[in-house]
Structure formats: structure tokens, C-alpha cells
Image 1 (cartoon, rainbow, N blue to C red):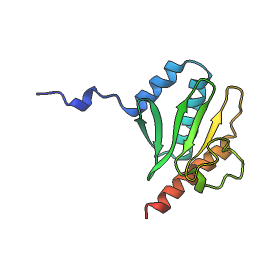
Image 2: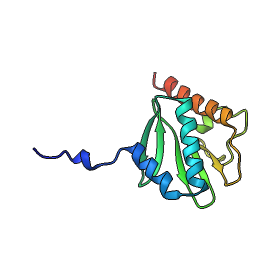
Image 3: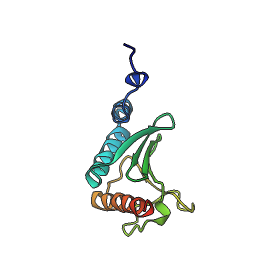
Image 4: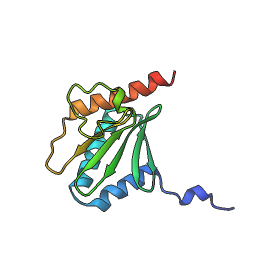
Length: 131
């Protein structure tokens, strides 16, 4: 019996775990923290691994990506321009017509409740768009 080609492919969740471990610094801890908040906000969220190393979270469409750079962890919300952001979390990609992002730097604190609310709003927007 032949092994399935997909058996050699790591799951997106394991690839994200490996990326967090590979970073080994504040960026890995931050990515792990926001990932946990995303899962708290949307327990049925689907994780994907795209574009050669970017974690992406979906619920009835893309919610956000979790990119890591030397000086920031960037959460880019696919439909961020359509979301209300009463806590002012969006601080990057503000000029675009579609996306908005949150750049988290090493010493930044995360407003967990506001982030979970924003994630929930993104999922709700995807659900309303899917109808």
C-alpha cells in the first residue's frame, strides 16, 4: 500500500507551533499569545499556513494573518477597513481600502478583550458576507 502524499505534509497547526518555537524570542511568545486569543474568541477557527510561512486564521473567510518581522508581530485583518475599531487597535496599513493591521512591538501590551472583540467582529462580518 502506498503512503498518501499528504501524510508527509505537516498540519498547519504544527507548522505554526514550529514557527513559534523557531522564533524563540518575544515574537514567538507574542504570536503564541495572539493565537491563543484568536482561539478563545473563535473556538472553531481554522488555522492555515500560507505563503511560505505565514499563519492565517479563517472562519467563513479569512480573519487575519500573523506575520513576524524583526521589530513587530503584525496581525493583518483581511477586511479590517470594514470593521469598527472603538479601542483603536489598528495602527498599520491604515490607508488601504480593505485591510487594516495591528503592529505589536516587543514592549507593547495587548488589550486582550478589545482584540478578541475585533476578532469576533471579523468573523461576524465574514458570516454576514457568506449569506
